[in-house]
Length: 328
Image (cartoon, rainbow, N blue to C red; front, side):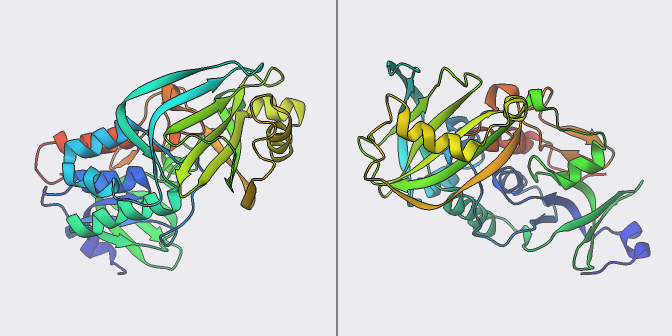
């Protein structure tokens, strides 16, 4: 795949290179279907791969995919394991609760399976070249093309590069070189999978709040096959100031919260508790610089540990409204 500088200037290898094959990148590739473009979709991982997340798939994200092609959503509804979500239960620190009922159909599914299924749609329905185990080492934005240098030594040239590679985006670091971690606009979270959790309601996601840590919450999301994604997230500013051990706090809450105590006595934890960071963003969902576009930021209204991972889907999928012509 190495490309010489002279040939790249005359004819870049691809029209569009999408960095990141998670939900935003896969949705972008699906949106570019039928435009007559040479598209490369690359990711540093090999799928299926796990992604630390709450595993809640937003209804508006499925709606955006359905606008591209209803067949995409129909295929995802066949995914297993999954749990169709109809309502959410919000539980106050004292144990009182109320329910929110969702209008859009949606479901929970482990990202290990969901992201792989979405990428499979790209393979089945588009001519995009999917490159796994392709870590971006350096990005050069030149007047006539962009060059992506991969860790293995290969080069990719394209007319436009789109960064869909998440909160720690390599493309974002090229476009936004200034420090981006602002603890007041950043959250930290941990999650683990459990089975045999008592009184779990299929179709109901649960959110638990604590008096001691109001700038965060604990979640319990059924993901199918009798398993639940259980996690805790809060503002990084609070975690840093009070030196909070989120993994320890999660287990303490499971044992002491009025609405949770007793529900985990017979539960079995599946694997370790794993942590992740989540920039919540303070601006738009995309940045543009020359031939590079970054849609790795999250929107404040979606920036929760359970749902922000898919916040760029509508933006990526909206590219289907672009005129059907090659990039200049």
